[in-house]
Length: 88
Ligand SMILES: [Zn+2]
Image (cartoon, rainbow, N blue to C red; front, side, top):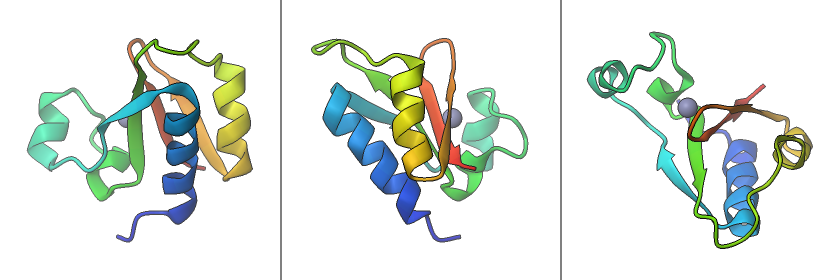
């Protein structure tokens, strides 16, 4: 499956704006299982990114990242220790 260009641009904007890093993109089925990903995770086909903020600038509110995500027809889920981005 070809990665979604809008998702790439979305994550690029979030990382560039908020000093964030991608910690997960494609996952093999065994890696996905090891990290507790759901069986049908979008990470299994490169359709999702996980992002963490390094704190050198004020980390964004969920509303701020949702605003960027919606601009690119993506959604964001705020997890315990990262934000998960995928196409809607
Ligand atoms: Zn994720």
